[in-house]
Length: 84
Image 1 (cartoon, rainbow, N blue to C red):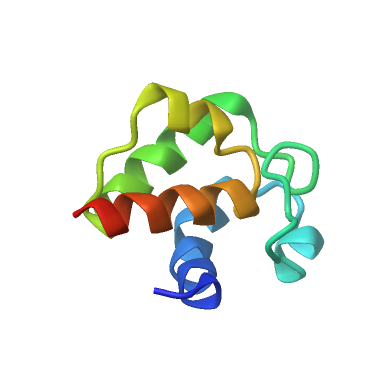
Image 2 (image 1 turned 135 degrees about the vertical axis):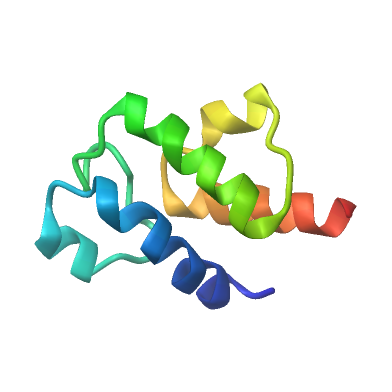
């Protein structure tokens, strides 16, 4: 699964928690969940749980801590999918 496909699958997961619609419309690999989209840290946990379900993967705590932007999130998803 390439980066753009992952971003497209992440959009509906992230959208309910976004506080900045304009930033969401310009979402890309460099988008940071907290500083760009104004998503609070508690909602990041919800996003991680939804990502696990959507991609049928398990994300460990170490990886979860790195999922602060799309670039790292994509890399973690790709790694976990490759391990399956």
